[in-house]
Figure 1 (cartoon, rainbow, N blue to C red):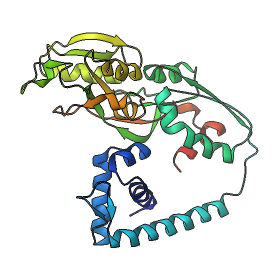
Figure 2: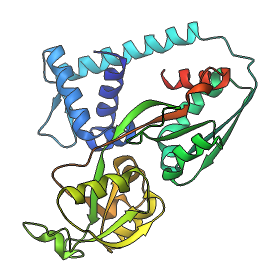
Figure 3: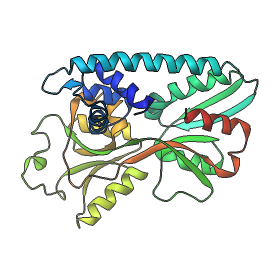
Figure 4: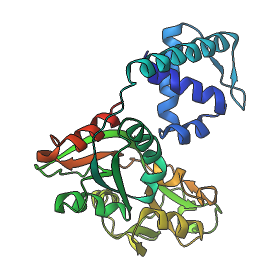
Amino acid sequence: MDYKDLQVFISIAAQQNLGRASQQLHASPSTLSRRLARMEQEVGAILFKRDAQPLVLTPAGELFRQHAEQTLAAWDALRAAVNTEVSDMTGSITLYCSVTASYSFLADLLTRFRERYPKVDLRIHTGDAAESIPRVESGDADVVIAARPEQLSSGLTFKTITPSPLLFIAPRSLGTVPQITQAEIDWSTVPMVLSESGLARTRVNHWFDARGVKPHIYAQVSGNEAIVSMVALGVGVGVVPELVLHNSPMASRVRILNVQPELEPFAVGLCAQSQRLQEPLLQALWQTATR
């Protein structure tokens, strides 16, 4: 068991719901459930009453919560004591990411970076996630937050921060897209809303090709956020990363389809040109992301 496990437990205890905790921690509910089961195995006791909604701590769980809070408080105090040095490093870093990534990762990463390197100028650009890797390859961005591509250029280095499942989503109303109410879905008739390009489009294309299906593409859009909006309007079925769905204001108007086999999840993280990682500013940001 490590400090991250304790943080996960504290979040679940505070949210009293795996779904809400998963949004806060940027991890799927199934991942949190597995971590919780592992913690219970190590402790040797049930920590939550699973049949209760919201989740309720057992007496053993309450004792473990106190232990987790005390341990994390001591760890924070130790880090504060040994990380009192503030760097005088100056310069600028250009970082590119999607709007969703800015909600999910940027605040925490930049808060920690600014605490240590207050004189470094951070220039943040946001846009289509599909543009992330090309931006760092061309040098338009020093570093990007992106999904790891299937084939990473030999000149790039990628640091994974978190996985994000790739989900099929449909309108909340069951009758809006009648093709998906059948016991055996004929995917060639389902109106699809897909991204114009990028990793998500590549993986969904492979999924359809493996089944010998030519998809009925209703719309192609730039950016995963727009897919959630269009699906919420009832025009068809879309495919988006879980992180995009959790951060969308339209999330309550769509539902996740249980499609098998599942699409390969994204690995989301930092990407930069390998030859530049020895530069002090990039090295500082890279190291901050690992803490």
